[in-house]
Length: 364
Image (cartoon, rainbow, N blue to C red; front, side, top):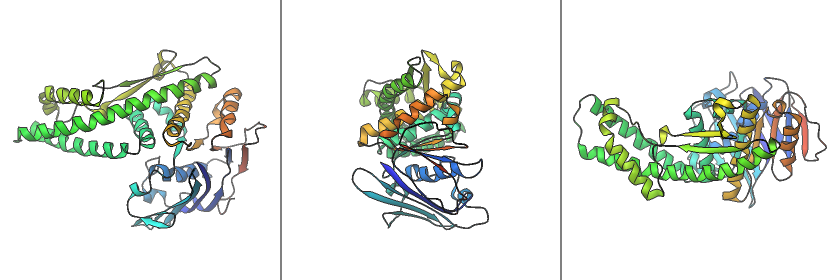
């Protein structure tokens, strides 16, 4: 998959831009606050359907404006595509190849991208929610049906929590209703649990190779899925979820919230057998997250037969020369769009294309 063009009007600090990209490695250089990360955010918007920074549409508007638009042109192994998003202050409009689509799900899945930005170090240093969020986004690109299962689970969790809150307050509830929500949660949780485990098994395989290469054979990654349930298959996993939910219903009633389920799971990422959260250096943490992100791309390739676009925000400046050169050597098969404050590329790699950011009136 190759991104050919990104366009934006009245978006963030960008008045107007029209940026063309080439295959291999593209480096965008510019001063701080010039809008480099905003470009990556705008590109990734079409992969996830929303800002990776958690910003709403009104936050994406250029100050003082009432509407903005984003658009990309890209190619996959079958054909060329265009995607466009317009927010006029009230209505959201989405287009695929010029045809208006009604729902965000109708435009997801066409463009695939993997993004790394400095806040992703929270994948190592942060709490379980950071790692679950990474996992949910990554698995959904690997298996698009994950979106539906996860959406169904959130609805079940919301309803079950409401029921538990009512029981906590002493309100009458039908025992049969409790059983209905237990069954629904067990069924959806089992599907998600199995898909997450399958994904992490593949991710570990690729990340281990990448980490050994990027560290000069000195470091190895191990990934462990931490969950209330560890079933042999989907049927066994669903059975175990039903059991744990039934056995702990009194405890959950007292808490007024679901204490068990995939919404509380975590990942333990280890380097050479030690927890990266507590024992890895800053450099090891950055390399580990980068390896996981590159492995995310490999998992996407394993399911679709083509690589996503890799978006790396200010990552090379934090790596030593050997690790930097290793990343640049990957550009022959993949497309990278990398931002940095200054040109720190010292490479003869013909795939490296370095460009200075303009005023964002028009950049080609």
